Length: 124
Image 1 (cartoon, helix red, strand yellow):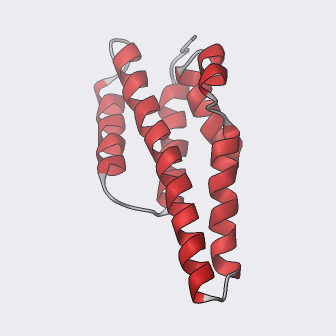
Image 2 (tube, helix red, strand yellow):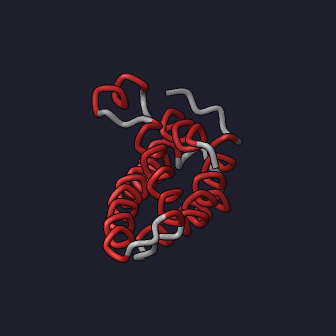
């Protein structure tokens, strides 16, 4: 997935000024993507451990921001959303609470959250 899906989700929920002031942008996702790409290329055991630690660290940052964005989106827009969409988002929050480091699952959660929020004309 491209980093713009991640950034799009955050921009859909938050004011752009807030994101900029907090330093939250697509660079965080890009860093995680780079760390993920580096996992396959490392042969040394120490290098693998360092690379995996770097990936997990950046993954947690992105995962936490995605989870918080979904929570805030639900809180701010729950009265305009259908019950099925609220249930989908609640399920995604529960999935993000689990201790996982699967980038493909995180990407799918981001894409699904975007598709849910896109159904509504959310103006922030």
